Image 1: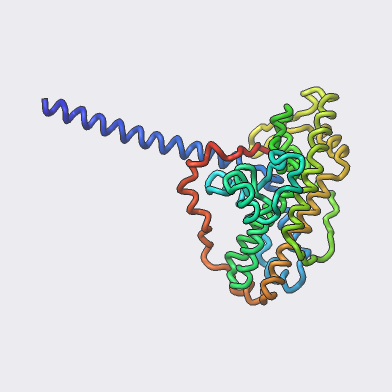
Image 2 (image 1 turned 90 degrees about the vertical axis):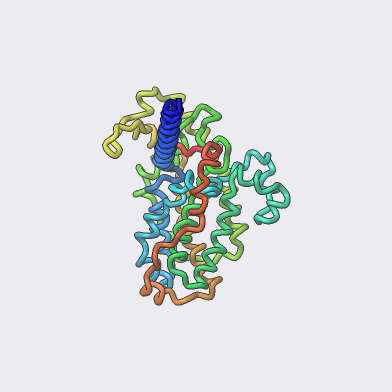
Length: 344
């Protein structure tokens, strides 16, 4: 009898061990799958391009540093997207759903974070996106990094803030209908911010002249959000109008992407939609580049214009352990609540 009980206990222990490992493997597989799908927000190509072009608008005193690390700033422009499902609190930094606050949202929402928290509550704000407030926070962090002459933090925050500023310029980042899912236009998110720039951005006129100091970052980032939201209606309307005159086999085509046959909006449909938008994508991309470099410059000025030539020679320290990485331990707590990002 004792041996029978011992045998059952061993079998039960084996089952628990197997179940635990199977669960861990399944969760890891799910996490990696979600990570592979987190491609959105201007598309990786466009985010890298925006940060890279922003470097060339900086004054010589800053270019001595930023040009040396231009590849880092470009490649790491996509890090916030990679963190969306891994870091608690990351996802809401990329958007703001203005329509949940009503028609007078831009007039009623406080422009500074603490005032917004007092009026609306932090949980509600985060649920519907905080990009205009987080850009202000990141700018303050970059200013401190310049003051501290912390090369690793300057680089990381510069790359990150470029991403958030660019996201604020995307019209579909200002609405609950961020992927056309409420109007039967699924896929428009990646179409506008990834497919169109990849096809046409090489022909955009991106020379913007020298940087300018931003006296009021809060005011300026909210103007960006206002401009994005004003453009949102045409993004949806023109695509719907164009779709009505296209057969499905003409609207979409198949291309090899990383050796995978992928369905994309056809070249013909993309060209006609791009013309209907009348330069909208180019204007939002240009404005992104302009503001990214302006904010980098403003933070440097506010920090007292430290000698970046000395920092460039010093080189970055051991890759900084992002303070947000602590959130990776609890990513499962929010996994099902993170707004999914459509594939591009």
